[in-house]
Every structure is written in C-alpha cells, then in structure tokens.
Image (cartoon, rainbow, N blue to C red):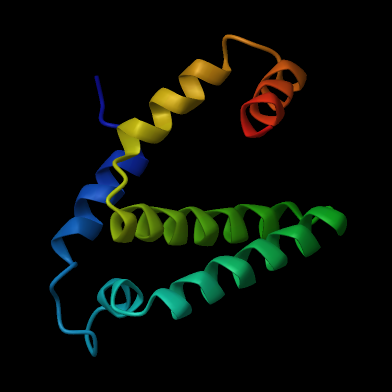
Length: 108
C-alpha cells in the first residue's frame, strides 16, 4: 500500500527539524511557536475567505498551506500523524452530532 502523502510529508518535515533557520522555513517555524500559531491563524482565515467566495482554487491552495502548518504544529508538539488518524477513526463510529455532544459531556 502506498504511504499516505501526509505521513510522507511529516517524515520529510522531521528531517528539517535541526536545519539552519535561515535555510529552512520549517526549522524557522519549529523554533518560533508564536510565528507558527500566527501562520495557522492566517492560513485558516485565508481558507475561510475562499470558502465564502466559493473559490475552489483558493480552497485547494489554502487547504494545502493549512495542512502543512498543521503538520509542523504536530511535529512541534510531539504529535504523530497516527494519533490524529486514530482519533478520526474513532469519530467515524458516531455521527458528528453525537461526537460533539460526547465532548461537551466530557468537559462538564
């Protein structure tokens, strides 16, 4: 089976963790949590604008940017993609409404 592109990208990003921050944008983001958070916010906002404008090309581009920054966030936080896939897999066993209710009940 072919490795999922996000897993492959995550492995590639791991190799850049200790690169020179002047030569690697990934290393720069990993060394600056405030910049990483800002970029995730920016990419999210840009995606929202493209959703509202029904801009398919923009949605593809901004989704790609957001996924990249999310992968860097996971790397920065010690989260492995398989942990995300496992959580998503659990959520497929119930409807979105049921899943939201269960999280609300857990937080009470």
